Amino acid sequence: MSLDKSRVEFRIVIRRKTLFYTIILIIPTVLMAFLSMLVFYLPAECSEKITLAISILLALVVFLLLVSKILPPTSDTIPLMAKYLLMTFVMNIITIMSTVCVLNVHFRSALTHQMPQSVRILFLNFLPKLLCMPLPQPLRRNFGISSIRHRPLNVRGGKRLAEVDQQNTEIGVDSSNTLPFDITRNLSLNNNTKLKKKQISRRKRFLTTQSQKERRYFDRSPGSPLPQLRKLQKGIFNNSSSSKYLFLNKFSQNLIEKQEELSNLMAKGVSGVQFISEHIRAEMDDKKVRDEWRFISMVIDRLLSLLFFGITLGGAIAIILTVPHIFEQVDQQKNRLIYGKEYLNFWFITVFLPTKFVFSSLAEERLIKDLFRGYNHLIRPVANLSNSPLEIRFSLALILLINVDEKNQIMQTNVWPTMKWIDYQMKWNPSDYENIRTIRVPPEKVWLPDIVLFNNADGNYEVSFYSNVVIESNGEMLWVPPAIYKSSCIIDVEFFPFDEQTCAMIFGSWTFNKNEVVISYLGNKRQVELNDYSESAIWDLMEVPGQLIHQKSKISYQIKIRRKTSSTQ
View 1: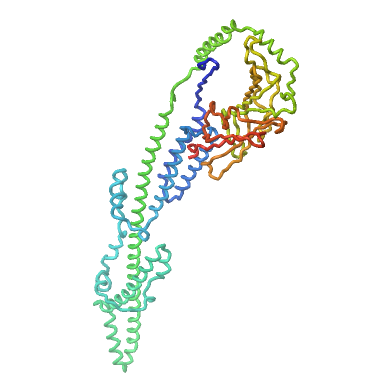
View 2: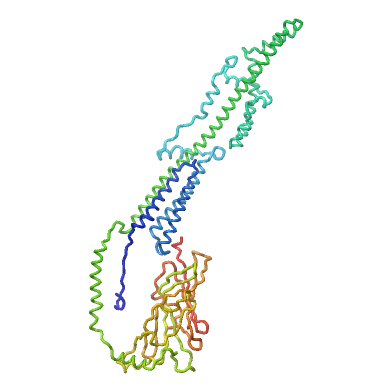
């Protein structure tokens, strides 16, 4: 109740029952928040890490749209549900960015990146121990190729293959006769083209010289029959007169050719084995570097998963703890009994007690009869047509900015238009009627100005409630009908959502022209009255000037508003 006891205000406090929204919104959102952490446990080789993260992001966008449809777009406060969704949304965005970085690290190789020593110490020594990640068993550098290459191998003289490398000398021969297979074709399958081309040229030179070295080695070996066969052939050639040696000469020639052919084949075989050894050695060096980068990506995934789990869990608990009376139960029956008694007491006091002071005023009844005797409310209250136009003093009080529909370009407001004019037939002498100076009569009994909103958007030109007309003893008429108007408003979307809009409300007489009715400012107030204005949660009211237009036959109010940006950020 107000201080002067002229108004009664009831405050109704209600609390939402949260079971429905807990099942529909809260639990799925929390599960999606924790589901986003599984991106860090998904192997990079499956190529689905980014897909999973973006799918969760799209689901969060759907939930954000659902919450925006339920809640009003207020900028005064941000709902807890919107805060949690926003936190989850931001965390998911960071997850996607982190996953991109992890994949970049995972697919690095020796050709593209060189691992710094600080990275090796941090991610291969320190963090794995801190995160309880066991290091994988160290790979053998060459998978035993070194032992195969240097294994003792008897070749006609018991010499090892390693000794062959020490005894050979550089002798240039055609490499096409010594390569065991098409090196260029096999090595082109490797992605590391630049490195492999260098390896091919180096190994071609190696095999070319190696084949010639081994051929000379077999010729010079102590157990090789080639020198004796050549001596025998030379002796036979010198004694060619004897026919019995012709057969031996031919036989020795064939034996020498077979021995040389066998020597070439063995040299090519050994060269091929050595080439394969070198190739596998280079492949394993590259694979070792790639495995190190992959292990670093696993360490980063483990670190980020623990970090995100802590942030998500802590944020969820913090938001839940900020909810008031989350575990409090309300007894509706108890409240019904308590407030029911208070209502009965209030109804008894306000209805029954004042009745002893209600009396009819005979003087007021007599005044009304005298005033309306012969009065015609259809006639404009002027003494004669030659008089000046009837002046309507007008002002507008803005009570509430209900809505601004940007899509349909409509502004909905709750206003109190105030109109004052002089009716010469409504004058009396207060002393003749027990000093009554003011009376109130229904609006249908007196003449009313037909002032309406010209830029109406819904076709409803009438006011919401036809209140009584207050009549003073000097003939001054006061009418304040409350109204809810929908007016057209041209929306400027250039700077949305940081926009300002200017909406006009134009009032004027619907049937009387400028020679019959003119409008002036009430109390010289050129702006909209804001004494009873309730602030909007979406828009800030900047200024509301008024201006008389069309030779004072209309009045236009320019309502300038600015959007609050907290709800759009």
